[in-house]
Length: 154
Image 1 (cartoon, rainbow, N blue to C red):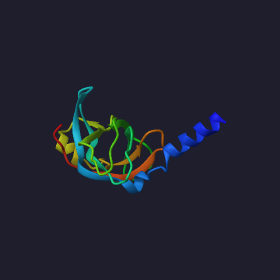
Image 2 (spheres, rainbow, N blue to C red):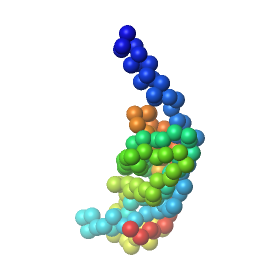
Image 3 (cartoon, rainbow, N blue to C red):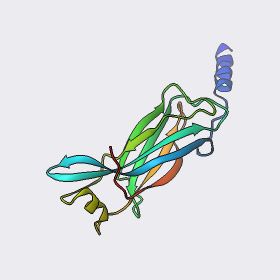
């Protein structure tokens, strides 16, 4: 009997799940390409996006995490991914995170200058799919965003 009471209390404490696709507002600060250094004598450019998140729900989102899946436009496959914790202490209703930046570990390498690489005829633009979750909830896609074809300072 005590087990049933505990299970009932645990279920009611969890409450309804927050739909992050509707209640987590993303505000893009910037996207583009950054210099990731020299790899085997070649310049490496990788896509990045910076943003903030605002909790528009009436519940605190504990241990908010973000998974960024980078890909090339026209190709639905994953090109590179990055995982980050957006807010370990929890994001209260109406509260926003500080700026978050995710950088793909994968990009382009070449012998041209960074600007010439972005203008190359074989350059394929990139995009990022952002997924979020809080606590032990399932990952929810919160959007797909283009990576602008511009150089950003690191």
